[in-house]
Image (tube, rainbow, N blue to C red; front, side):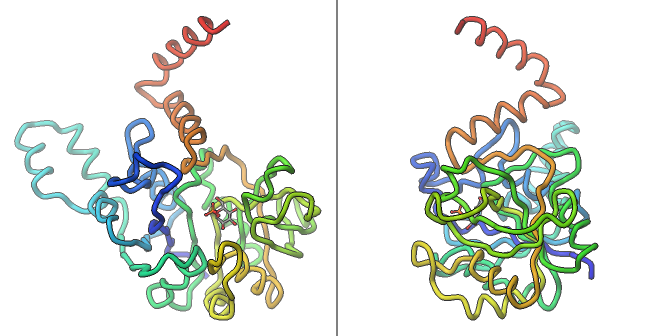
Length: 290
Ligand code: G1P
């Protein structure tokens, strides 16, 4: 079964980033030269996915507009002969087909996925969370699709985190069946520190079989009173099976101020035009700190 669609939930209020996100959606905050949401969409496009389903809420129109065709802007740039900029702007609007679904109430990540049922249909699909940026030689979603191809069961991306931080994530316990691939025995959302046998944390990339929708129907509110995707996935694990994959790449929590700064430095250093001079600037700053 081929994975053709990716769900990208963008309905959150971005409270961790106030006041920057009072008017601007957090997904539109810029890392170097593009909004964080563009990194997410470029990753799914590079993984062979053809359509993005945005789960939106009011005040998020800028995200849809960003991926839309802008007649005024493109004709202005063409007229002025600004061909490099025109190429960049066209690249964005031609990246992928974007469909939007509204999440009318903030009932949690599981609920955000649930509202895409009609658009997804009876197909496996990817879910990418906008806060998690993954810089990898092979796109993270592509790596996960390889695992899905082999096992034909849902796959979640994981990474080891410090044991005192397990309460910030979904945590999986499982047995390693091949290098970096785990058959999941248990999945729990934001467990109290010291209550799990593992520190393998869920990072916001999932490949889900469509049976997840039936599991979501049976998922009661969990941590924070929200419908948790983790809880629905634990039902799916119990009924069919579930795999976790320790992906290769660097992950940044762009929804957190320090994580966002780290992402900015990382992507600036690898930027084709800015990388060299930015590295030089950083070296100067670091030596002045000594
Ligand atoms: C969500 C998921 C959690 C996962 C995390 C990764 O939590 O519910 O399982 O570990 O994303 O970023 P949130 O960060 O939205 O609280």
